[in-house]
Image 1 (spheres, rainbow, N blue to C red):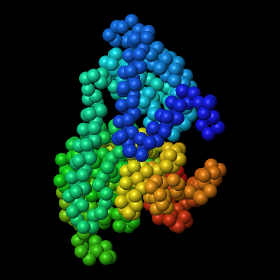
Image 2: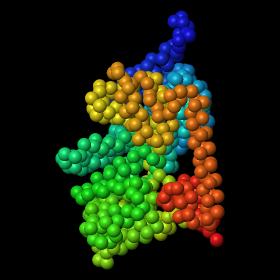
Image 3: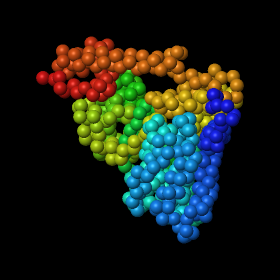
Image 4: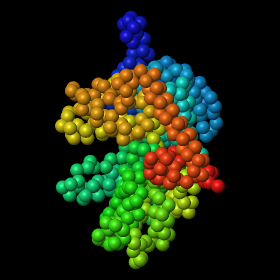
Length: 522
Protein backbone atom coordinates (compact mmCIF):
# COMPACT_ATOMS: atom_id res chain seq x y z
CA UNK A 1 0.00 0.00 0.00
CA UNK A 2 2.99 2.35 0.49
CA UNK A 3 3.33 2.95 -3.27
CA UNK A 4 -0.39 3.53 -3.80
CA UNK A 5 -1.72 7.07 -4.00
CA UNK A 6 -5.02 7.99 -2.40
CA UNK A 7 -6.68 8.45 -5.80
CA UNK A 8 -5.76 4.85 -6.75
CA UNK A 9 -7.51 3.25 -3.79
CA UNK A 10 -10.39 0.96 -4.70
CA UNK A 11 -13.23 -0.31 -2.50
CA UNK A 12 -11.58 -3.74 -2.48
CA UNK A 13 -8.19 -2.35 -1.44
CA UNK A 14 -9.91 -0.36 1.28
CA UNK A 15 -11.75 -3.50 2.46
CA UNK A 16 -8.52 -5.51 2.57
CA UNK A 17 -6.63 -2.85 4.52
CA UNK A 18 -9.51 -2.26 6.92
CA UNK A 19 -10.02 -5.96 7.72
CA UNK A 20 -6.30 -6.65 8.17
CA UNK A 21 -5.86 -3.71 10.51
CA UNK A 22 -8.99 -4.74 12.39
CA UNK A 23 -7.55 -8.23 12.85
CA UNK A 24 -4.25 -6.82 14.11
CA UNK A 25 -6.11 -4.65 16.62
CA UNK A 26 -8.22 -7.60 17.80
CA UNK A 27 -5.05 -9.67 18.32
CA UNK A 28 -4.05 -7.34 21.12
CA UNK A 29 -7.28 -8.17 22.95
CA UNK A 30 -6.53 -11.89 23.05
CA UNK A 31 -7.62 -15.09 21.30
CA UNK A 32 -11.12 -15.27 22.73
CA UNK A 33 -12.04 -11.72 21.75
CA UNK A 34 -10.50 -12.20 18.30
CA UNK A 35 -12.53 -15.35 17.69
CA UNK A 36 -15.70 -13.67 18.93
CA UNK A 37 -15.11 -10.79 16.54
CA UNK A 38 -14.61 -13.13 13.56
CA UNK A 39 -17.69 -15.17 14.45
CA UNK A 40 -19.84 -12.08 14.92
CA UNK A 41 -18.77 -10.50 11.63
CA UNK A 42 -19.16 -13.77 9.72
CA UNK A 43 -22.54 -14.64 11.24
CA UNK A 44 -24.16 -11.25 10.74
CA UNK A 45 -22.58 -10.66 7.31
CA UNK A 46 -23.61 -14.14 6.12
CA UNK A 47 -27.23 -13.51 7.10
CA UNK A 48 -27.18 -10.10 5.42
CA UNK A 49 -25.72 -11.39 2.14
CA UNK A 50 -28.16 -14.29 2.06
CA UNK A 51 -31.08 -11.88 2.42
CA UNK A 52 -29.64 -9.63 -0.32
CA UNK A 53 -29.33 -12.65 -2.62
CA UNK A 54 -32.89 -13.76 -1.90
CA UNK A 55 -34.38 -10.36 -2.59
CA UNK A 56 -32.22 -9.77 -5.65
CA UNK A 57 -32.32 -13.02 -7.62
CA UNK A 58 -34.15 -15.78 -5.80
CA UNK A 59 -37.78 -16.88 -6.06
CA UNK A 60 -38.49 -16.46 -2.36
CA UNK A 61 -38.64 -20.14 -1.35
CA UNK A 62 -38.03 -20.89 2.32
CA UNK A 63 -34.63 -22.53 1.77
CA UNK A 64 -31.92 -22.34 -0.87
CA UNK A 65 -31.19 -25.42 -2.95
CA UNK A 66 -27.61 -26.53 -3.66
CA UNK A 67 -27.37 -24.72 -7.01
CA UNK A 68 -28.47 -21.40 -5.53
CA UNK A 69 -26.23 -21.90 -2.49
CA UNK A 70 -23.22 -22.39 -4.78
CA UNK A 71 -24.17 -19.34 -6.83
CA UNK A 72 -24.45 -17.28 -3.64
CA UNK A 73 -21.07 -18.21 -2.07
CA UNK A 74 -19.17 -17.91 -5.38
CA UNK A 75 -20.75 -14.57 -6.22
CA UNK A 76 -20.19 -13.29 -2.70
CA UNK A 77 -16.44 -14.01 -2.71
CA UNK A 78 -15.78 -13.06 -6.32
CA UNK A 79 -17.54 -9.71 -5.98
CA UNK A 80 -15.07 -8.67 -3.27
CA UNK A 81 -11.88 -9.69 -5.05
CA UNK A 82 -11.72 -13.49 -4.92
CA UNK A 83 -11.38 -15.92 -7.79
CA UNK A 84 -13.57 -18.81 -6.64
CA UNK A 85 -14.76 -21.59 -8.95
CA UNK A 86 -16.79 -24.73 -8.37
CA UNK A 87 -14.62 -27.85 -8.37
CA UNK A 88 -17.29 -30.49 -7.68
CA UNK A 89 -20.68 -30.88 -6.04
CA UNK A 90 -23.13 -33.57 -4.97
CA UNK A 91 -25.87 -33.72 -2.32
CA UNK A 92 -23.28 -34.58 0.37
CA UNK A 93 -20.34 -32.33 -0.44
CA UNK A 94 -19.48 -29.14 -2.32
CA UNK A 95 -15.89 -28.27 -3.20
CA UNK A 96 -14.84 -24.79 -4.32
CA UNK A 97 -11.32 -23.53 -5.05
CA UNK A 98 -9.78 -20.09 -5.18
CA UNK A 99 -6.56 -18.69 -6.64
CA UNK A 100 -6.85 -15.14 -5.24
CA UNK A 101 -7.79 -14.28 -1.68
CA UNK A 102 -10.34 -11.47 -1.16
CA UNK A 103 -8.21 -10.25 1.76
CA UNK A 104 -5.09 -9.95 -0.40
CA UNK A 105 -1.65 -11.58 -0.12
CA UNK A 106 -1.16 -10.26 3.42
CA UNK A 107 -3.66 -12.85 4.61
CA UNK A 108 -0.62 -15.06 5.36
CA UNK A 109 -0.12 -12.89 8.45
CA UNK A 110 -3.67 -13.61 9.65
CA UNK A 111 -4.57 -17.24 8.88
CA UNK A 112 -7.47 -16.95 11.32
CA UNK A 113 -9.30 -14.99 8.59
CA UNK A 114 -9.93 -18.37 6.95
CA UNK A 115 -12.34 -18.90 9.82
CA UNK A 116 -14.41 -16.01 8.48
CA UNK A 117 -14.78 -17.77 5.14
CA UNK A 118 -15.56 -20.99 6.97
CA UNK A 119 -18.20 -19.33 9.14
CA UNK A 120 -19.90 -17.52 6.26
CA UNK A 121 -20.03 -20.65 4.08
CA UNK A 122 -20.96 -22.90 7.02
CA UNK A 123 -23.54 -20.59 8.54
CA UNK A 124 -25.47 -20.15 5.28
CA UNK A 125 -25.29 -23.91 4.55
CA UNK A 126 -26.49 -24.84 8.05
CA UNK A 127 -29.49 -22.52 7.84
CA UNK A 128 -30.55 -24.03 4.53
CA UNK A 129 -29.50 -27.68 4.84
CA UNK A 130 -29.58 -28.19 8.62
CA UNK A 131 -25.90 -29.09 9.02
CA UNK A 132 -22.50 -28.26 7.55
CA UNK A 133 -18.86 -28.99 8.25
CA UNK A 134 -16.42 -26.68 6.48
CA UNK A 135 -12.94 -28.04 5.81
CA UNK A 136 -10.21 -25.66 4.60
CA UNK A 137 -8.17 -28.31 2.78
CA UNK A 138 -5.78 -25.77 1.24
CA UNK A 139 -5.23 -22.14 2.08
CA UNK A 140 -3.30 -19.19 0.68
CA UNK A 141 -2.86 -18.11 4.30
CA UNK A 142 -0.91 -21.33 4.94
CA UNK A 143 1.30 -20.82 1.88
CA UNK A 144 -0.49 -23.52 -0.16
CA UNK A 145 -0.70 -21.20 -3.17
CA UNK A 146 -4.48 -21.58 -3.46
CA UNK A 147 -7.56 -22.22 -1.38
CA UNK A 148 -9.69 -25.35 -1.48
CA UNK A 149 -12.83 -25.40 0.63
CA UNK A 150 -14.93 -28.52 1.24
CA UNK A 151 -18.47 -27.94 2.50
CA UNK A 152 -19.78 -31.25 3.89
CA UNK A 153 -23.56 -31.46 4.20
CA UNK A 154 -23.86 -35.08 5.40
CA UNK A 155 -22.89 -35.39 9.07
CA UNK A 156 -22.35 -39.17 9.01
CA UNK A 157 -20.12 -39.11 5.94
CA UNK A 158 -18.04 -36.21 7.26
CA UNK A 159 -17.04 -37.82 10.58
CA UNK A 160 -13.40 -38.28 9.53
CA UNK A 161 -13.11 -34.89 7.84
CA UNK A 162 -11.27 -32.02 9.55
CA UNK A 163 -13.08 -28.74 9.96
CA UNK A 164 -15.59 -26.68 11.92
CA UNK A 165 -19.17 -27.84 12.33
CA UNK A 166 -22.18 -25.57 11.90
CA UNK A 167 -25.82 -26.07 12.74
CA UNK A 168 -28.81 -23.81 12.30
CA UNK A 169 -27.86 -20.93 14.60
CA UNK A 170 -31.52 -20.11 15.03
CA UNK A 171 -31.61 -23.10 17.38
CA UNK A 172 -28.23 -23.35 19.15
CA UNK A 173 -24.59 -24.07 18.66
CA UNK A 174 -24.47 -27.17 20.85
CA UNK A 175 -21.18 -28.47 19.46
CA UNK A 176 -19.31 -25.31 20.46
CA UNK A 177 -20.97 -25.20 23.86
CA UNK A 178 -20.17 -28.86 24.50
CA UNK A 179 -16.49 -28.34 23.72
CA UNK A 180 -16.26 -25.17 25.81
CA UNK A 181 -17.82 -27.11 28.69
CA UNK A 182 -15.31 -29.95 28.26
CA UNK A 183 -12.38 -27.51 28.14
CA UNK A 184 -13.62 -25.82 31.31
CA UNK A 185 -14.02 -29.14 33.15
CA UNK A 186 -10.46 -30.22 32.32
CA UNK A 187 -9.01 -26.84 33.31
CA UNK A 188 -10.92 -26.79 36.60
CA UNK A 189 -9.86 -30.36 37.46
CA UNK A 190 -6.20 -29.52 36.84
CA UNK A 191 -6.53 -26.26 38.77
CA UNK A 192 -7.93 -28.01 41.86
CA UNK A 193 -4.86 -30.26 42.05
CA UNK A 194 -2.51 -27.32 41.42
CA UNK A 195 -4.12 -25.25 44.17
CA UNK A 196 -3.77 -28.14 46.59
CA UNK A 197 -0.10 -28.61 45.73
CA UNK A 198 0.70 -24.87 45.60
CA UNK A 199 -0.08 -24.50 49.29
CA UNK A 200 3.43 -25.81 49.85
CA UNK A 201 5.88 -22.85 50.06
CA UNK A 202 8.39 -24.51 47.73
CA UNK A 203 5.89 -24.80 44.90
CA UNK A 204 5.93 -21.65 42.75
CA UNK A 205 4.89 -23.11 39.41
CA UNK A 206 2.21 -21.53 37.23
CA UNK A 207 -1.30 -23.03 37.09
CA UNK A 208 -1.68 -25.46 34.18
CA UNK A 209 -3.40 -24.20 31.04
CA UNK A 210 -4.07 -26.15 27.84
CA UNK A 211 -4.56 -24.06 24.70
CA UNK A 212 -6.85 -25.87 22.28
CA UNK A 213 -8.23 -23.61 19.56
CA UNK A 214 -6.96 -25.87 16.76
CA UNK A 215 -8.99 -28.86 15.56
CA UNK A 216 -6.15 -31.30 16.39
CA UNK A 217 -5.82 -30.12 19.98
CA UNK A 218 -9.58 -30.23 20.42
CA UNK A 219 -9.44 -33.90 19.47
CA UNK A 220 -6.76 -34.42 22.12
CA UNK A 221 -9.05 -32.94 24.79
CA UNK A 222 -11.95 -35.08 23.63
CA UNK A 223 -9.71 -38.15 23.87
CA UNK A 224 -8.67 -37.14 27.41
CA UNK A 225 -12.32 -37.05 28.48
CA UNK A 226 -12.94 -40.53 27.06
CA UNK A 227 -9.87 -42.41 28.35
CA UNK A 228 -9.05 -40.61 31.62
CA UNK A 229 -11.70 -42.44 33.71
CA UNK A 230 -10.46 -45.85 32.50
CA UNK A 231 -7.53 -47.87 33.90
CA UNK A 232 -5.80 -48.25 30.51
CA UNK A 233 -2.08 -47.56 30.18
CA UNK A 234 -1.43 -44.65 27.82
CA UNK A 235 1.45 -43.77 25.50
CA UNK A 236 1.75 -40.07 24.65
CA UNK A 237 3.80 -39.47 21.52
CA UNK A 238 4.97 -36.09 20.27
CA UNK A 239 7.98 -33.93 19.52
CA UNK A 240 10.06 -32.31 22.23
CA UNK A 241 8.30 -29.32 23.79
CA UNK A 242 4.71 -30.03 22.69
CA UNK A 243 3.40 -30.43 26.24
CA UNK A 244 3.26 -34.17 26.82
CA UNK A 245 3.49 -33.82 30.61
CA UNK A 246 0.67 -31.25 30.58
CA UNK A 247 -1.56 -33.77 28.79
CA UNK A 248 -0.53 -36.47 31.29
CA UNK A 249 -1.51 -34.16 34.16
CA UNK A 250 -4.89 -33.56 32.50
CA UNK A 251 -5.43 -37.34 32.23
CA UNK A 252 -4.63 -37.71 35.93
CA UNK A 253 -6.85 -34.78 36.93
CA UNK A 254 -9.82 -36.22 35.04
CA UNK A 255 -9.35 -39.75 36.43
CA UNK A 256 -10.63 -41.41 39.60
CA UNK A 257 -7.06 -41.21 40.94
CA UNK A 258 -7.00 -37.41 41.05
CA UNK A 259 -6.84 -37.35 44.87
CA UNK A 260 -3.68 -39.48 44.82
CA UNK A 261 -0.14 -38.49 43.75
CA UNK A 262 0.90 -37.60 40.21
CA UNK A 263 4.58 -38.51 40.01
CA UNK A 264 6.48 -37.38 36.86
CA UNK A 265 9.95 -38.69 36.05
CA UNK A 266 12.22 -38.10 33.07
CA UNK A 267 13.82 -41.49 32.39
CA UNK A 268 16.38 -39.94 30.06
CA UNK A 269 17.76 -37.68 32.80
CA UNK A 270 18.66 -40.52 35.22
CA UNK A 271 22.13 -42.10 35.04
CA UNK A 272 21.81 -45.66 33.83
CA UNK A 273 23.58 -47.04 36.91
CA UNK A 274 20.93 -45.45 39.19
CA UNK A 275 17.85 -45.99 37.04
CA UNK A 276 16.50 -49.17 38.63
CA UNK A 277 17.18 -47.93 42.16
CA UNK A 278 15.42 -44.60 41.55
CA UNK A 279 12.41 -46.22 39.89
CA UNK A 280 11.95 -49.30 42.04
CA UNK A 281 13.85 -48.41 45.22
CA UNK A 282 16.58 -50.41 46.97
CA UNK A 283 17.20 -52.25 50.19
CA UNK A 284 19.87 -51.40 52.73
CA UNK A 285 23.20 -52.83 51.62
CA UNK A 286 22.01 -53.55 48.08
CA UNK A 287 25.15 -51.84 46.78
CA UNK A 288 27.98 -49.63 47.99
CA UNK A 289 26.45 -46.49 49.44
CA UNK A 290 23.01 -48.00 50.06
CA UNK A 291 23.00 -47.22 53.78
CA UNK A 292 19.23 -47.24 54.16
CA UNK A 293 16.02 -48.51 52.56
CA UNK A 294 14.96 -46.29 49.67
CA UNK A 295 11.43 -46.08 48.24
CA UNK A 296 11.40 -45.69 44.47
CA UNK A 297 9.02 -43.66 42.34
CA UNK A 298 6.69 -46.63 41.87
CA UNK A 299 6.01 -46.80 45.60
CA UNK A 300 5.66 -43.01 45.87
CA UNK A 301 2.97 -43.05 43.17
CA UNK A 302 0.91 -45.66 45.03
CA UNK A 303 -2.79 -45.21 44.22
CA UNK A 304 -2.06 -42.42 41.73
CA UNK A 305 -0.35 -41.94 38.38
CA UNK A 306 3.28 -42.47 37.39
CA UNK A 307 4.36 -40.50 34.32
CA UNK A 308 7.41 -41.97 32.56
CA UNK A 309 8.74 -39.38 30.13
CA UNK A 310 11.32 -40.52 27.54
CA UNK A 311 10.31 -44.11 28.29
CA UNK A 312 12.44 -45.20 25.32
CA UNK A 313 15.51 -44.43 27.47
CA UNK A 314 14.82 -47.30 29.90
CA UNK A 315 17.58 -49.89 30.13
CA UNK A 316 16.77 -53.54 29.23
CA UNK A 317 16.73 -54.49 32.94
CA UNK A 318 14.37 -51.64 33.81
CA UNK A 319 12.12 -52.61 30.91
CA UNK A 320 11.85 -56.14 32.31
CA UNK A 321 10.94 -54.84 35.77
CA UNK A 322 8.39 -52.42 34.31
CA UNK A 323 6.72 -55.22 32.35
CA UNK A 324 6.27 -57.21 35.53
CA UNK A 325 4.70 -54.26 37.34
CA UNK A 326 2.19 -53.75 34.54
CA UNK A 327 1.36 -57.44 34.17
CA UNK A 328 1.36 -58.56 37.80
CA UNK A 329 1.00 -55.33 39.77
CA UNK A 330 4.03 -56.26 41.85
CA UNK A 331 7.75 -55.52 42.08
CA UNK A 332 10.86 -55.93 44.23
CA UNK A 333 13.33 -53.30 45.34
CA UNK A 334 16.90 -53.61 44.10
CA UNK A 335 18.65 -56.09 46.40
CA UNK A 336 15.35 -57.13 47.96
CA UNK A 337 13.51 -60.44 48.09
CA UNK A 338 10.14 -59.24 49.35
CA UNK A 339 7.39 -58.80 46.76
CA UNK A 340 5.70 -55.39 46.95
CA UNK A 341 2.24 -54.94 45.48
CA UNK A 342 1.58 -51.59 43.80
CA UNK A 343 -1.62 -50.02 42.52
CA UNK A 344 -0.99 -47.20 40.09
CA UNK A 345 -1.63 -46.07 36.55
CA UNK A 346 1.27 -45.74 34.15
CA UNK A 347 1.34 -43.04 31.49
CA UNK A 348 4.40 -43.11 29.25
CA UNK A 349 5.70 -40.56 26.77
CA UNK A 350 8.26 -40.53 23.99
CA UNK A 351 9.49 -38.18 21.28
CA UNK A 352 10.67 -41.01 19.02
CA UNK A 353 8.89 -43.63 16.95
CA UNK A 354 8.76 -46.33 19.61
CA UNK A 355 7.60 -49.02 17.19
CA UNK A 356 10.72 -48.39 15.10
CA UNK A 357 12.78 -48.74 18.28
CA UNK A 358 11.13 -52.12 18.87
CA UNK A 359 12.02 -53.24 15.36
CA UNK A 360 15.64 -52.27 16.02
CA UNK A 361 15.70 -54.51 19.08
CA UNK A 362 16.21 -51.58 21.47
CA UNK A 363 12.82 -51.82 23.20
CA UNK A 364 10.91 -54.91 24.32
CA UNK A 365 8.12 -55.86 21.96
CA UNK A 366 5.86 -57.16 24.78
CA UNK A 367 6.41 -54.02 26.88
CA UNK A 368 5.58 -51.79 23.91
CA UNK A 369 2.12 -53.32 23.59
CA UNK A 370 1.58 -53.18 27.34
CA UNK A 371 2.24 -49.43 27.64
CA UNK A 372 0.53 -48.66 24.32
CA UNK A 373 -3.03 -49.77 25.04
CA UNK A 374 -4.08 -46.23 24.09
CA UNK A 375 -1.87 -43.88 22.08
CA UNK A 376 -2.30 -40.11 22.14
CA UNK A 377 -0.53 -38.14 19.40
CA UNK A 378 0.22 -34.53 20.36
CA UNK A 379 0.60 -32.39 17.22
CA UNK A 380 3.67 -30.16 16.79
CA UNK A 381 3.14 -26.41 16.96
CA UNK A 382 3.58 -26.04 13.19
CA UNK A 383 0.36 -28.09 12.74
CA UNK A 384 -1.68 -25.96 15.12
CA UNK A 385 -1.27 -22.32 13.93
CA UNK A 386 -4.68 -21.46 15.41
CA UNK A 387 -3.13 -21.87 18.88
CA UNK A 388 -0.22 -19.46 18.33
CA UNK A 389 -1.95 -16.22 19.24
CA UNK A 390 -3.41 -17.56 22.51
CA UNK A 391 -0.07 -19.13 23.44
CA UNK A 392 1.75 -15.84 22.83
CA UNK A 393 -0.66 -13.93 25.08
CA UNK A 394 -0.53 -16.58 27.82
CA UNK A 395 3.28 -16.72 27.81
CA UNK A 396 3.67 -12.93 27.81
CA UNK A 397 1.21 -12.61 30.66
CA UNK A 398 3.20 -15.07 32.76
CA UNK A 399 6.62 -13.72 31.85
CA UNK A 400 5.58 -10.12 32.51
CA UNK A 401 4.49 -11.13 36.00
CA UNK A 402 7.66 -13.17 36.55
CA UNK A 403 10.03 -10.37 35.51
CA UNK A 404 7.93 -7.43 36.77
CA UNK A 405 7.23 -6.13 33.25
CA UNK A 406 4.08 -4.65 31.68
CA UNK A 407 4.41 -6.25 28.25
CA UNK A 408 1.42 -8.28 27.12
CA UNK A 409 1.52 -7.83 23.32
CA UNK A 410 3.87 -8.10 20.36
CA UNK A 411 4.13 -5.85 17.35
CA UNK A 412 2.56 -6.80 14.04
CA UNK A 413 5.97 -7.54 12.53
CA UNK A 414 6.93 -9.84 15.42
CA UNK A 415 3.63 -11.70 15.11
CA UNK A 416 4.38 -12.21 11.43
CA UNK A 417 7.78 -13.68 12.36
CA UNK A 418 6.16 -15.97 14.91
CA UNK A 419 3.70 -17.28 12.32
CA UNK A 420 6.40 -17.77 9.70
CA UNK A 421 8.86 -19.67 11.92
CA UNK A 422 8.60 -23.47 12.12
CA UNK A 423 9.29 -23.77 15.91
CA UNK A 424 11.17 -27.08 15.94
CA UNK A 425 11.28 -26.85 19.75
CA UNK A 426 7.52 -26.27 19.82
CA UNK A 427 5.85 -24.54 22.79
CA UNK A 428 9.00 -24.78 24.91
CA UNK A 429 11.03 -22.94 22.26
CA UNK A 430 8.28 -20.34 21.82
CA UNK A 431 8.24 -19.74 25.58
CA UNK A 432 12.03 -19.46 25.73
CA UNK A 433 12.13 -17.05 22.77
CA UNK A 434 9.38 -14.80 24.11
CA UNK A 435 10.97 -14.65 27.57
CA UNK A 436 14.32 -13.64 26.07
CA UNK A 437 12.63 -11.07 23.81
CA UNK A 438 10.64 -9.65 26.72
CA UNK A 439 13.78 -9.17 28.81
CA UNK A 440 15.33 -7.01 26.07
CA UNK A 441 12.16 -4.96 25.45
CA UNK A 442 11.66 -1.52 26.95
CA UNK A 443 8.30 -0.38 25.59
CA UNK A 444 4.79 -1.71 26.06
CA UNK A 445 5.16 -4.41 23.39
CA UNK A 446 7.83 -6.68 21.96
CA UNK A 447 9.15 -5.20 18.71
CA UNK A 448 12.09 -7.57 18.12
CA UNK A 449 11.98 -11.36 18.30
CA UNK A 450 15.14 -12.83 19.85
CA UNK A 451 15.29 -16.21 18.12
CA UNK A 452 18.04 -18.51 19.39
CA UNK A 453 20.06 -18.38 16.19
CA UNK A 454 22.98 -16.32 14.87
CA UNK A 455 22.47 -12.54 15.10
CA UNK A 456 22.58 -12.30 11.32
CA UNK A 457 19.92 -14.98 11.01
CA UNK A 458 17.42 -12.58 9.52
CA UNK A 459 19.22 -13.54 6.35
CA UNK A 460 17.72 -16.85 5.21
CA UNK A 461 21.16 -17.94 4.03
CA UNK A 462 22.38 -18.02 7.65
CA UNK A 463 19.52 -20.30 8.62
CA UNK A 464 20.34 -22.57 5.72
CA UNK A 465 24.01 -22.67 6.79
CA UNK A 466 23.07 -23.69 10.32
CA UNK A 467 20.81 -26.44 9.04
CA UNK A 468 23.44 -27.66 6.61
CA UNK A 469 26.05 -27.71 9.38
CA UNK A 470 23.79 -29.78 11.62
CA UNK A 471 23.09 -32.20 8.79
CA UNK A 472 26.82 -32.55 8.10
CA UNK A 473 27.55 -33.33 11.77
CA UNK A 474 24.74 -35.88 11.86
CA UNK A 475 26.02 -37.50 8.67
CA UNK A 476 29.55 -37.87 10.09
CA UNK A 477 28.21 -39.16 13.42
CA UNK A 478 25.98 -41.73 11.72
CA UNK A 479 28.82 -42.95 9.50
CA UNK A 480 31.20 -43.23 12.47
CA UNK A 481 28.55 -45.10 14.48
CA UNK A 482 28.02 -47.66 11.73
CA UNK A 483 31.78 -48.12 11.28
CA UNK A 484 32.25 -48.63 15.03
CA UNK A 485 29.41 -51.18 15.15
CA UNK A 486 30.91 -53.07 12.26
CA UNK A 487 34.41 -52.99 13.79
CA UNK A 488 33.19 -54.28 17.17
CA UNK A 489 30.46 -56.58 15.77
CA UNK A 490 27.59 -54.71 17.38
CA UNK A 491 29.08 -54.57 20.89
CA UNK A 492 27.38 -51.46 22.34
CA UNK A 493 29.73 -51.21 25.32
CA UNK A 494 32.83 -51.11 23.12
CA UNK A 495 31.20 -48.59 20.77
CA UNK A 496 30.40 -46.38 23.78
CA UNK A 497 34.03 -46.54 24.93
CA UNK A 498 35.26 -45.67 21.44
CA UNK A 499 32.89 -42.68 21.17
CA UNK A 500 33.56 -41.70 24.82
CA UNK A 501 29.85 -41.62 25.68
CA UNK A 502 27.51 -43.78 27.80
CA UNK A 503 25.85 -46.92 26.47
CA UNK A 504 22.50 -45.19 26.86
CA UNK A 505 23.72 -42.35 24.63
CA UNK A 506 24.69 -44.95 22.03
CA UNK A 507 21.20 -46.49 22.20
CA UNK A 508 19.72 -43.01 21.82
CA UNK A 509 21.80 -42.38 18.68
CA UNK A 510 20.85 -45.79 17.27
CA UNK A 511 17.21 -44.79 17.65
CA UNK A 512 17.81 -41.33 16.20
CA UNK A 513 19.55 -42.67 13.08
CA UNK A 514 17.37 -45.81 12.86
CA UNK A 515 20.36 -48.15 13.02
CA UNK A 516 19.88 -51.72 14.28
CA UNK A 517 22.87 -53.04 16.27
CA UNK A 518 21.70 -56.63 15.69
CA UNK A 519 22.55 -56.27 12.01
CA UNK A 520 26.25 -56.02 12.94
CA UNK A 521 26.42 -58.98 15.33
CA UNK A 522 27.86 -62.25 14.04
